[in-house]
Image (cartoon, rainbow, N blue to C red; front, side):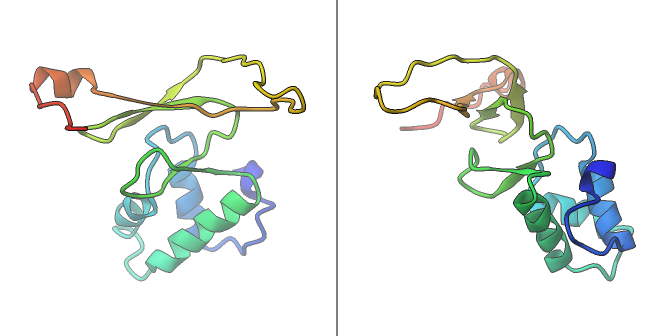
Length: 135
């Protein structure tokens, strides 16, 4: 929780619930996922509170907004460099902890970071024999 103390928001119980939900969360939830989970305890909380808290966290570098899922924004509280893998059927996202070192194809650029997105079909979906997505 200490890493979220500088995001510039008054720490209400609702905002603390968002932070608690994200602490150590590896599921890469959307704002909707977080809202659905937390609103069970805080019935008067608005979706805007969740979204604004996430935006403030992202703007202060406490959270990464993922673009891997074209259907919705996902959030990752793990800000250290890593990559992602998403199942194209169930939409589950996993962290990929492999470090890729790439040489710049342009001599006047120095690469300072990268983020690679992988897509595939997870074991559960393969067992269900889900047909492959058409391209």
